[in-house]
Image 1 (cartoon, rainbow, N blue to C red):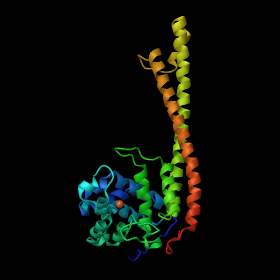
Image 2: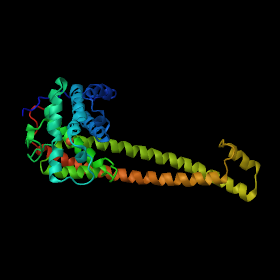
Image 3: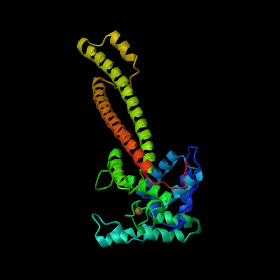
Image 4: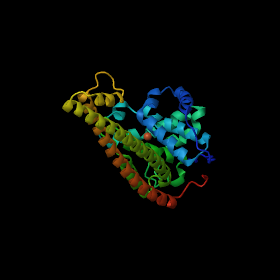
Length: 311
Ligand SMILES: [Fe+2]
C-alpha cells in the first residue's frame, strides 16, 4: 500500500475552535452518527488535535487528522454487536472479527470520494512499527504518518478513559505503558513526546489552578476564623457595641450565625485539604511526566522517522 503524502507546513499554533462542527457536518453523510458521539471517538479526536497542535502542523493537515480521528473506528458499524459490545475478554475468533473493523473502515471510506484519501489511514491505525500490528502487518514508515498519530491518541484515550467497569489509568501510568510499547518499537516515541509535552502544560495549568484555589481558601478561612472569634466573644460576654461593629463589617446575610460559620469553616477546611492533595498529586504527575518526556525524546531520536516530514 502506498503511503499518503503529507504536507506538514509547520510554524503557526492552530486555533481549533469551531472546527468540530464543520468536520461533523462532513462526516454526517456517512449516516453513522452514534459512532461520532461515542466518548472514545471524541477523546481520540481531542488527543489527536492536541498532538497536532503541539507539532505545529498546518491548519489543513490538522483538519485532515481530526477527520481521520473521527473516522478511525467507523468500520465498527459492520462488526456484529455481540462482539462489539461483549463484556469481558474476546475469544480468538471474536478478536479476528473485531480486527476486521480496520478493513471495513477502509472499505467504507473508499465508497466516498471525499474520504478516499483517508481510507489507508483508517485501515492502518492498529499497525505497529515492528510489523506486529494488523490488518496488513506494515512496518516502519509504510504506516501512514497520520495513522501513527491516531494510534498514539487511540491507545492513550483507551487507557485513561474512565469506563463503566474500571477506573482509567492516571496520565503518567498510561504514558508508562505506552513507553513500554515504544521501547519494543510498536508505537512512535517521537509522536508520544508531543503528547507528553501537551500533558505537561495541562498539568502545569492544573498546578497553578490548585495553588490559586489554596490561596483563596486560606483567605476565606482567615475571615471565618476571625468571625469565629467574634461569635465566641458574643457567646462569652454577650452582644456588645464593639462586636456588633465588627460583625457589620462583614455584611452578613440575616440568619448567618455561629453554627453556619462553624459549618462553613469545616467545609472550607476540607476543601483546602482536598486541594492540597490534588496539588501534591499533580506535582508528582508533573515530575514523572518530565522523566517520561526525556525517555520519549531519546527513544524518538533512534526512531526511523518519516522521510517527508519536517517541522
Ligand atoms: Fe480501532
